[in-house]
Length: 201
Length: 201
DNA sequence: GTCTATACTGAGATAGAC
DNA sequence: GTCTATCTCAGTATAGAC
Image (cartoon, rainbow over all chains, first blue to last red; front, side, top):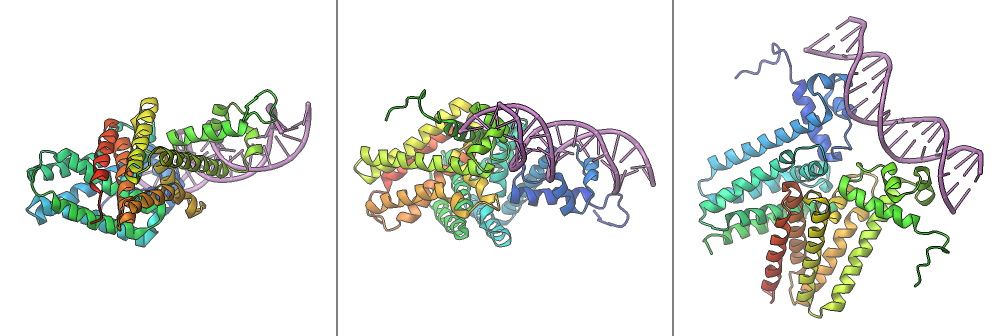
């Protein structure tokens, strides 16, 4: 797989657009980011956006797709790196918190979890298919459930909900209160919590 | 306190506007609700809105203020009804969950917690004072901390964060996954969790 | 395939008649 | 104090030149 950028017909304008959209949507929300803003950030003329995407919703869909791949890559990496489901779950919490901290350093603490805020906004939009709004949460939920089940827990689904809810809730509080350190504190607490869930009850 | 609507000079147009704004912002988000929509729902001519509010942001501010009063009223009611801080906290979780269920029945499960979604959206807006975005969370947080402290917990602040995060996170999952029953399940779990926090550790 | 110019719509806000 | 008419501007999307 060579990436000879000189000869390829499309030198990544689409990728640039999706990436600019991802960042802007994170910072300003879907309705707060105009196509002009996206095009400008991607260094692509405004009208040209429509050569790559039929509508604005399509761009947002591409952002969701990008996040899906990000999550799947993280999961694959965790499964390579750790053999026990408990270590994987702890690595998962760790990775999410790490990203949150990096995002807070780069942009400020007020933007929350990219997956959570985007999914919440999508869920409210009437013309968005439910599955698109649910997809990012479902990927994490299903995988976490799998891990808890591999740990021998019969209540694996409930624990997965609890884990994800704790993380998403911390992100909401972090964003609204503007407290970046809250995220890392709660991440440490979740690590301990996962350790406590060793055996079936 | 008589509400003789025939004789009062302003028969509540302002209230109608704020209430329409509250509902529409909950359903469609701030940027998704236009002034025309608000005016129409409140049965007030569009241009007339500016007699009551200087800008759109002022209407949103009034909605936050309305929610603040709602929360303070709930807290006052809980303090009247229950003498022990534990019963108060359980009543709090109960009340929030009950409202969430009612909202889900009326509008569908995809809209999340009114306080959480509004505060999250406000936190991202650059020209909104941080305190406005934080205020609804802070009211709940401070009060919950007080209750945990009255229960003799030294880690009262942490527990308050944990409680609120669990609730807000459940709301995010409920909204994005479209699962109304998730909210009540997590509320029951939180009741048990509060019971477990009886003595200082 | 790429980009410019522009059409069209709906937004927030204002002026001024009643 | 109340409402109509309208201004201005930014947004999405399109037509068509290159």
